[in-house]
Image (cartoon, rainbow over all chains, first blue to last red; front, side, top):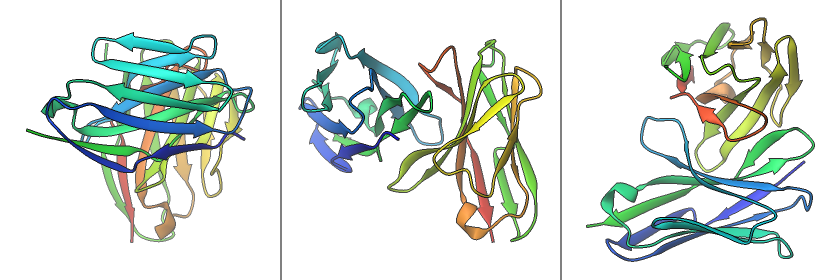
Length: 112
Length: 111
């Protein structure tokens, strides 16, 4: 099955700085890579996703990049704000199980 | 439109007891999933269903059973709870395999 590794496990930035979270995946057949944000006491919520036929996707302050050759993808958050503080998960579609395999999560802390 | 609703929100069990976690979705989604979340391990897939009456094993299925008798409900059962099953359990649903819509979780403690 698919294996997804995520780094770093914790990230602390100053408000206004950028934050980058990186993930690698193992299944070269994977074709869908979403990112989820989880706030305390809540379930994860989709914030952005990318498919394997696209190299980059942006949505306001959030962007995701994908390098299929190297099998890695990254989340970029610019002009961070305190409300960006949360746990972020990357995921890749497991083509064998028709389900998402998640990374281990990154706790982002934005210091005001 | 409630989305994905999980019942109960919290539960404490003694080792060997049984219980059922209920997940209900009102979005007419075909796919439903059960994940468990443990510190430092992300979300791991327990079981999933691609339609009413069908279920399949995920990454960590041992000690759990599931049923999908109705399209809108997906039940997760623990027949004989063990301390290793202490976790936060999330249900999710989707049209196709993505994007997933998650419930707010059930926090289970087994003593």
